[in-house]
Image (cartoon, rainbow, N blue to C red):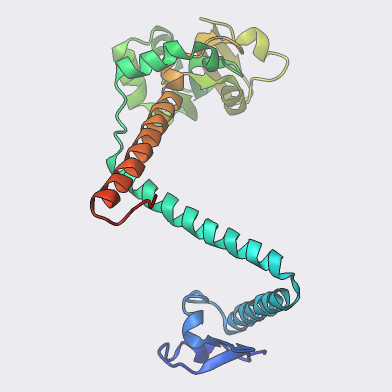
Length: 273
């Protein structure tokens, strides 16, 4: 069935007039509500609606063919799988709602430290990490000397000063207390390349580079290499996920036991000997 226009489909969504039929199954106007987004052109709307109707019909025709031609044993097997899938889907969704409403997601320092120390072998780095700060300045800016001095010293006052004038930097990163993947840093800084990055990116190394327009200042604060032990602060999100997932599993077991006990208590679940 091809339709010249989809506009009439949405005039009266309560109208039970069918718009397509496959054997004893009917498709109604109300089944197309929300299918076409507001502002879609008439031609595009027609294509979207016709494609939907064709797909609907094709699926029903294939299902009808399968029910008439597949062996009965195969159909019984599929029906069991469908029922089991529905049961699993509903049960999982219900349990997730209960667990997410009840689970404690706060991980204190002692818990994080315990998980970290218990699983040290798990927290080996698979790539290099760096702590660094970084500025890109106009090479001819008048206050570059002061900026460079403050950048190298970088006490609390210097950090506040650099933050306050950061609008004049072409690019910057001053959070040198955070571990960052070395690949992310190299991708961000265009003057670093395969030839110089190994030599330049060494612990406590101060780097000043220039090109035709810019002055690049970089201070490497610390470096960790692949297979080094990852710092606790870097893997803390992973630790939190481990702890919360464990709590969720424990809650699921508790809920399942409580549901069964409550059903037995209220005579909704009985086992006959």
